[in-house]
Length: 128
Image (tube, rainbow, N blue to C red; front, side, top):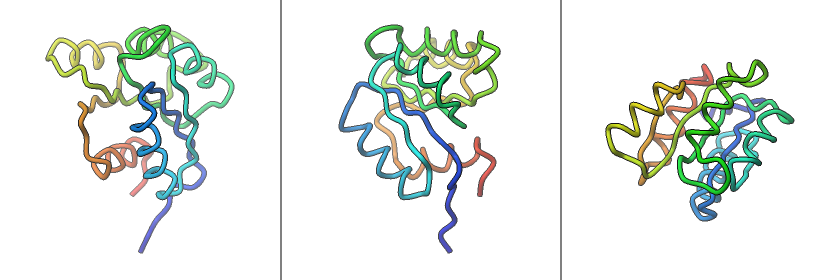
């Protein structure tokens, strides 16, 4: 039985085009609507304009970096309740602790397994 996550929208903010295409393909196959951006400013704009159900955020990208974007998302009344998953190559303990302290709901270190990412997103979206 293949359950889908149909009405849910996920915003992916990452400047690695190959990784974004891989995630977009995997999430679209699972029935999610995917919005992709490549920089921090666009992530903030689309979070406000599209009201995604979840945001996948890289730490290292042009414009405000992922930690700055996360801080601004969590400081805004309009976006503070959107779950955010950090998906990044920044793997030092201090990076992980900073991301979680700023309000990330999960922190996944690259390289990652697509099925694991999907399982974590499903958990945050409250879907089986």
